[in-house]
Image 1 (tube, one colour):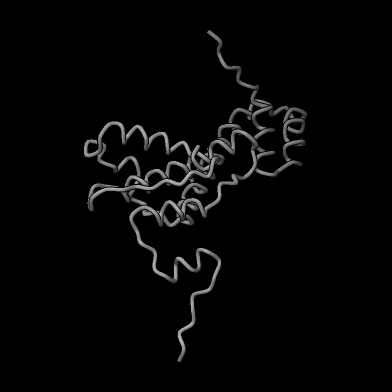
Image 2: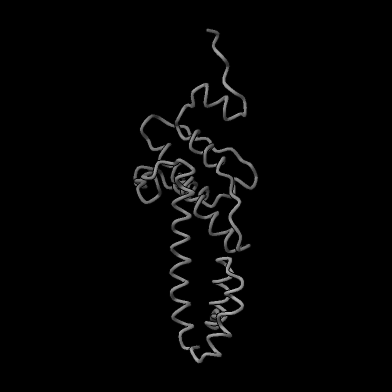
Length: 180
């Protein structure tokens, strides 16, 4: 069995500072600490900057969720999976990966009122947002490029019927003027 190799703390510290956009600090801090005889504080600094990276990630997820305007309480954690058949839950988990966005596939939910269509699709929207942040961060280290418009489409198609004004403005047109 292969065990993953963990880079030494000095490399971790340099990588974290570079991630934060502190390139000069990333280049200077390790040699200066070593020169001053304080190389033993590097693991502590890695721990502190790891906490900062995690806090930034959590704030970013919260900010992007607010920007998507999805109801905060409609997530997979609050979805009553017992009310939905197993094939539907499996399909929702598949949709939560966001692969349907790569192929520009539309997602429609049909069913009687009160069965959980809006909740399920909002949960997918939350999951897609989080997974896209993680995937893009791991792949490129840059900001994620998942379009918030896609979440808006999920939100609008999740049981809400947009008003005529919302439909027109979402297509880039201004609503029709009413003569005075």
